[in-house]
Length: 67
Image: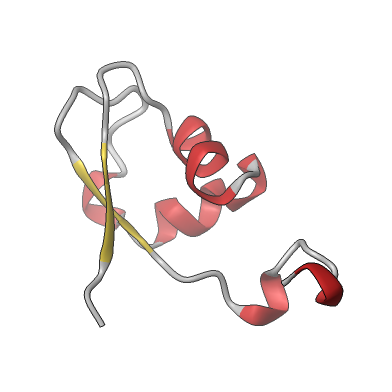
């Protein structure tokens, strides 16, 4: 399976990406821990590739009936 990637827009931040991709800012730490090479960014320039990890089942914020 191909890795999913988010391409930043100028001004994106980690929490903005988490909200857009996963629907909740609570996944910010998941994004950051899986993209350590980008950790120096607070505000992203455009065209930076962020690898999007799968949400581990036990970390899902959705109830079972919504998954």
